[in-house]
Each structure stands twice: as structure tokens, then as C-alpha cells.
Image 1: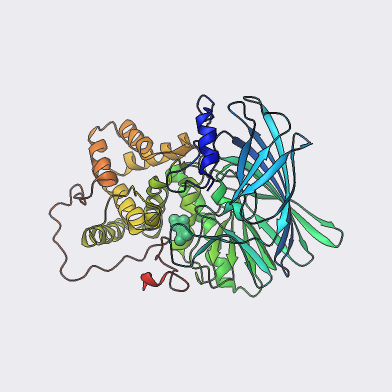
Image 2: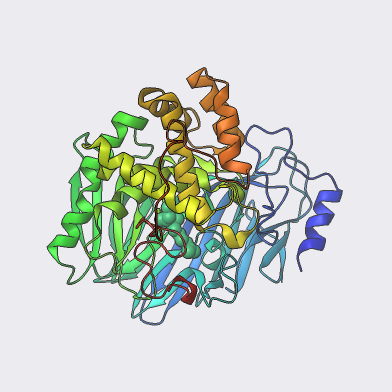
Length: 491
Ligand code: ARG
Ligand code: ZN
């Protein structure tokens, strides 16, 4: 529907080449999302939320740069009516085509110019059908549930609550100014910088000062209790739980503090200024999500156990700070989260860790799971991404030893901080820091070959007799916590 417009932009040569951090735009998995020709630098999102009515009234002030001269451009915005668009303070023409907000400024944007775009919009957000699970009646984005609201957008739900360049490489910083009725708390990504009463309501200002990809943006409005503490390394940790949440859940989430400091010893500095967790009370939400610096947990994770907490925390390095440039490479995030979730649980018992990874490997073999790099959106949250992706990292660890392996993971996380990466970047990092060229062949076979490779040094492992159970790991379409509300196919 919007492809003509996109092709028009492409035909005029408006691509992102030649800039310092180009937005690649247009992921082949989700061709209707993302917009060529713009790089967003910052989103300043003001929302007045009425949780009882389920309405939001928004103003998004977006700072962007056009790498090339541009006489019109588009943003993704689903369903919400727009009342006004300003470009550098001057009213701009705009129209809606499907989920595109097409904007024609009074004056063309000049190549490299920093531009302020303000969009006034509002209404009742409408969650988007999840394109990774066609026919499954699953949705993404902003949800209203019993006078509360929450957001889970992976992979393309952001446009349900703000006008976005919704593709994974156009990272930006964010500020959220959320105004809610008295008695409610608004939570968003990053750090709470102010909380003020305004006209009988309460306004919460949250700031995400590190680059963030659109699908990780989150807002939660509910009657939360806040538990504020610090990780052993001093990082502020905040836990937001709905009224009536038992202390055991809060204690479960609070394990993130010691975990964070422990993970730093393996993979380097935690990439954000603070960390937090928020619990969603909607039973329809059956998975956790690593929303940046403020992970989202379903109430079903009761209490949120260490597998959940360590998985979402590991994503802050792998997936959030370092994000995939293309969705097909999501194993980088999910394989690493699977690996570190398993490592955390067995960090004091190497034999138990090996056994847990071998259980994953046996499952990969028994299911004959295809390559970790996937070729269609339906496979994004499949076992290939999580189990074969996790096993790929274990194979690398077996091949080169722990200290070289963790050094690679640390360099990969730290050297690419705030950026987007590909599988090839991972392979190059592994070869470089192991000094072992054979690592390329090993990783390529795990990532791209149909056949499941042997595990280094484990070739003589005796085949299991009988069925191989599905190891209980976090995430994915049918992972841990997916017993309620998950697609029927998960059983
Ligand atoms: N990234 C999440 C995790 O692994 C899982 C998200 C699943 N998303 C979905 N639409 N099914 O923690
Ligand atoms: Zn995950």
C-alpha cells in the first residue's frame, strides 16, 4: 500500500548512504514499516493518558536529519488521528495512507539539516496484528487493560502510540512526558527524572539518553508500588509492581541487582544509567520483554524466577545496547539471552551448566532445527533463534575455551555499544579476538547450514534413547511462561 511512496523515495536516490550512522530502513521481513530518507535523532513524546477511558492525547516532537534533500517524508503511525504537523515550527501538509503519516513540509528538508517535526495526535490506541504469528490473533503495541495501559512492541508495535521510523536501525534517544490521573504511576524506559503534580494530575518524565530502537520503547500506566534500590555496583534499580503484588515477586525481580553486577564481570559495563522491571497484570500477556532499561514481565511469571530475570537482563547488552541490524539475525539477541540465562543459573556448577547446554543441543538435534539465521518473520521467535542460537554460542565456547569466549562476548557488547550489528559482525569479532580462523567455519555452519553441526569435543556423545524434552527456557513463541494466552500450537 505504501510501497509506491517508498519506491518514489528510492528512485530519487534518497537512501541513507554516506552519513555517519545511516538508518538502513525497510527490513525485508517487515516491508511496510520504516521509511527511507530520514534518520531520527530524538523522540520527545508527551502523552496525556486516561486509563479509565483508554485514550491518549499526544504530542511527539521529533528531531531528525535527512541525509539527502527531501521534499516529503513519512513516519509510521497506526490508527491514531492526527490534528497537526509542524516542521521547524511551520504547519506542514500531511495525509494518511494506511499506517503511513506522509508529511510535505512547506520548504524541502536540506541534506544534513537537523529538523524538528511536531505531530499532535490522539485517540484510543489500536494494537497491531502481530506479523510474526499470522492467524494467531496476537497483537502488538499499546494495550489498555482494566484501567491500566502497557506496551509490548517487538517487533513492529511502536506506531500504535507514537509516530515512529519503525525499523531497527534508526536508533534515537527518548524523553517521555506522561501525564496520568492522581493515584496512577507512569513508567517508561530509562530513568525517572521528574515527577510533578499538574492540574490535579501527575506528570512523570522519563529519559532514555542512550540510543534505543523503536520496538523497545515502552510506557506503563497503572497503580504501581515502586521499590527503589541499587545493584551492588551502584546502578539504580527500580521495580514497579501493581497493587497487591506479593513480596516474593518483588524479591524475584530484585535479583536483577546482583545479576547485573555479576554480568558486568563477564561482559563489561551495564550499558544504561539505570535498570528496572515492571509487572503487567493482563493475563493475555504471556511473555516477558526486554524493554530497554525497564524490562516488562507478565504476571504469569509468578514469582519472576531467575531464568526470566537473567534472560531479560542479558538482553540489555545483547539485543538492546547492541541490536540487530536485520531481524533475520535475532539469534544474536535470543541466543545470547538463552546462553546467559543458563550460565547464570549454573554459574557455580560447571558440570550442571554443560548438562543444561547439552540438553539444549540434544533438543536441537532431535528436532533437526534449521539454521539460527531465519528467513521469514514467522520464524523470528522460533526454536531456531533461541535454541540453535544458544547452542551456537556454546559450540563457540567449547571450541575456544571460556576466557576467550567471554572476551569475545565482552568486546562484542562493548565495542558495538549503542549500535546495530549483523551475524557477519559477530563472526568477525569472534575470529579477531580468538585469533582462530576455524571459528568462522564453525559459526557459519551453526548460523547458515541446514544440518545441525557436531559440538566441538563432544562428537562421541551417545545419542539419547527416547524422546528429547524441550528444555524450559525463557522467551520465544512457546517458551517458559507461555502457558496462558500463547498460540494454540504451543500445546
Ligand atoms: N524478546 C522476548 C524475550 O525473549 C520474547 C518476545 C516474544 N514476542 C512475541 N511477539 N511472541 O524475552
Ligand atoms: Zn529473549
